[in-house]
Length: 88
Image (cartoon, one colour):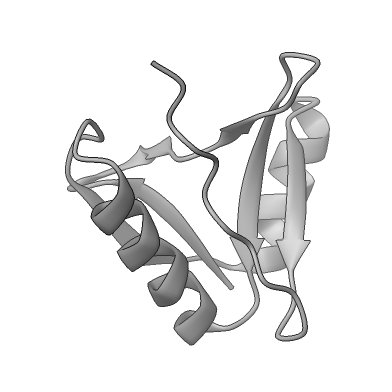
């Protein structure tokens, strides 16, 4: 599985803010989907710090998220996730 993190800082995990103000970490099953999302982020918003795709052990990552009450969403090969628009 794959997540997006700050470049050279795996602990800086990328998340998406929900309308309720919760932060949700997208966890991609396929590397190609993570790459597609990464490139959409890069093309659509220059305000992000440098990011990278990071491979994770999905079961351990999910356990940690659940222990810390961190929301996450598993993005399967059948899902298409589009980055939120920047609201200035």
